[in-house]
Amino acid sequence: MLFAPFAGKLSNQFGLMNFLRGALIIAVLGSLIIGISSNLVFLVLMSVVFVAGIALTVPTLISLVGQLGGKNHGAAVSLYTFILFIGTSLGPIIAVFLLKIVNYGMAFLCLAMLLGISLIISFYIKNDQS
Image (cartoon, rainbow, N blue to C red):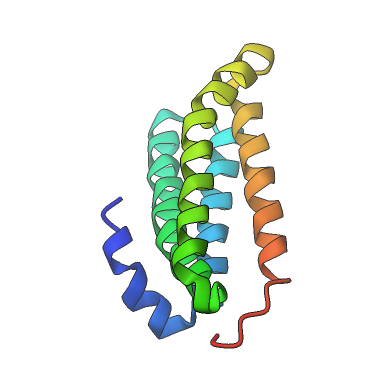
């Protein structure tokens, strides 16, 4: 989470959409490797990589939602925050359910797949300011 404060400066340097995609790639790779690895040291390292990707993605998404919201950027960010908190509340419940039916590796592979879908969707976002 120490990377989150640097997201604004880095997204200005690399461009908002490029930085968002890069952060999503980092999160996907971290989650994917956690799902297929069994080495404890490597799992811890990839966990840090995964969290860094998420820590960079969230502030970037908030900025993107604010830009895409136009005149209603306050309402757009509020709606995004509401959806974010729903995910934060339901995420652990879904994770526990998923871990009951599959092993932890498959759970992380499912997470990597969802993040990969997010990455693909990011290529369809039209942002005039990027």
